Image 1: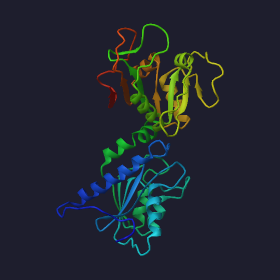
Image 2 (image 1 turned 90 degrees about the vertical axis):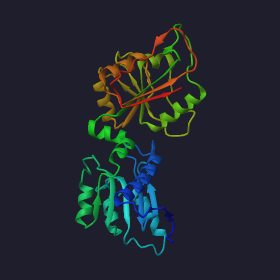
Image 3 (image 1 turned 135 degrees about the vertical axis):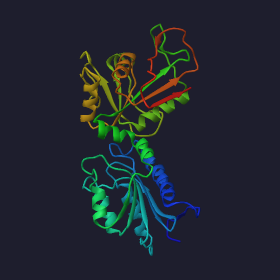
Image 4 (image 1 turned 180 degrees about the vertical axis):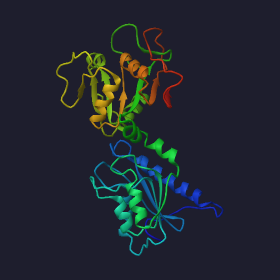
Length: 327
């Protein structure tokens, strides 16, 4: 048995397309492990299969390091006697064809003698955009495209939004009481999220490129916006200062004076920030909702009621494709 081999039970009546979907799901599982660590690169997993067996696999683990295909194929170099004749390489995004932080994966696939490549999504990056497939096909490799295409777009929704709409993927997030208030009627410190919700919130922070608040939240709460309760990379803190009233904003913050949501998102795009969590307050959240320029809403709903206070934003019935409510 080749080194690093994983046996997958294949029913003898499975079609080739069903087999391809089975192994592509494993690619997507592997790819998800890079969430928060490979940005602004996409999440990519790779599986090398021979005779119905996974003989190697890998995923893109950290920005600037090897891509998924290279990790999977280089792993086989330590396996003496492993022939790649008759193997299929599964990868959820078109192999790169240009020199970036690492050499082109398409070249390595050709070099290793792989004769069949199954892919989930085309790469919208203008530096790739079909060139990877053309290079593989020119070398006589069979290329099968669009296997589990929608699942792949869902996994890499941040990447596709950034590349195709030229803006970051936008997540609106707030905590609210059981009766729908964001803050009590009287001024003063308050806390709505439970300990478990707070930890989840900090995990979410590690998964996104940036986190944005308005000047009012900045002045009142002095937030650090770090994932203090969850191990992982910190997002880029951003403050939107439309009235130009903030001074001494820390140098590691991104301090914007943009007036419209469109201008704000363009500034974040120019800063190469692929996704952003908007944490409020109410005016900023309402502005994003009114603009329609958002992709997810995440609500942390407290078990406690306030009775009165600042009402939570109203999410239109026709709006984002994703709504997450954590009670």
